[in-house]
Image 1: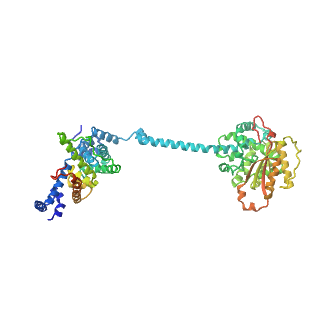
Image 2: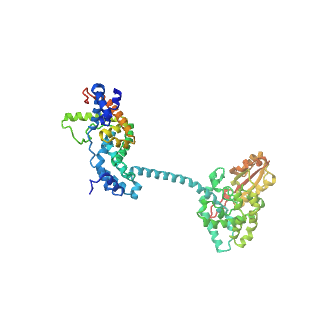
Image 3: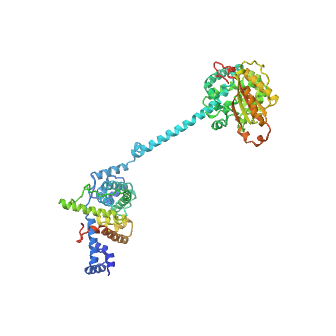
Length: 193
Length: 414
């Protein structure tokens, strides 16, 4: 029986003491965020699934190195971004990155019920994903952490191992770059498409 | 606050991370500047688009797959897993290793026959003595009788090897087969075309011949006795030829030491020692060894013509040869007669000027066919040897094939 109520720190301690089952709590708690972050960084569902598994496996293998000085999620994001960045470079060189157009991705909220609007939403998301893919990896990472995952400045600074001031300036630069990338698709009323 | 400053802080303004004073200044600027307003609207839209990206559901069974791998990583792999998993990596690796081992084994196997042949080339020493030696040797104890019978057995076993030994390729000597020469280094005076050289086999066997050691030792003892007897009955000229059979390196001299000779002595009965061993051993351990150190310029092996088969002993007329001295010519004729009479090879040493060497070979052609001709490498490079007027030639006279008298249990000697 998994004690879902216990905190990350306690779970980590248990895992460090040899309780492998406690790691499942951590997996269940963070898998979606980690997977989505990786997915948006890679733009490939299957690759993201494989890399996400690797991330959790790496976290388990090196959990004895986690000292609890930062949040477990921060530590996990860092591992995830490292794995995803490495894979992104490989995919970029192989030019295999693609955005699934055939609905292979399963949208959690299922927002658009109207088929027309659903198609519009999908197209918008594809444009945004393409724009993210075309960004510099550092810019993409910082935008995804801050705007997609809503990670606080301080945690972003810790994950990326840069000062908070640098996070702010780099975030501004990244948003400008994204805006420029998406500019051709903006209507006059600032709406995409 | 101008547009540049405002746009620089628009992202922080969006994040609401500016202090109040600066935030108020930006708000004031935005009320009057449409450009900065447009910039802000674009940033807001981008932020909304990214944050509005839908959360993607995980693949089915993701958690279980992760935990399965985690649990697998938590347990040490079994021996089977360590040896063979992951198959996609380890099977090709192991297959490659097997192929490499097979190639290596084939390579080693290819090299082995050479070693074997080299050991075979040494074997005729045991059984090449001819029929007379073993017949004349009369053992006085049961042990010696056994040794005698074992000699015959060994001879039977080595008969096919002798056929190999007769192969001219193997008779060529060390120059034609460097590997063979290398392996023969440990054997005293061993020359494929010098079968009469007395050698204590049990001390100088090369590693390749260590297999049938006990049997060889027995046969070696008997053949040594035969060899010693033969030495006794041979003329002094023959002894000289035997002593000067081949260039003997330092190692060979050591092997042919008195110690080896005394061991051979102890293997015979007192009668046998009285009859034959002592004088020959003396010469073997002193003068003969020293003479073996004298190198030759050339070594020739001739097979006497069939014509001589019907010659009766003493019937052969001494032939005049201009390439060598009359004494040497006489000695050569005597050796030829002995070869015909005894059916075993005879060796003589002659000297001739370098200019007469070819003539000497032509004159030899009257006696028989030159089967092997070799030059001694050391002498080739020896400046002192080049400066001398005379070439030293070791001549081995093989009897005609028809004059050989093979025993039923013994291989035909040449």
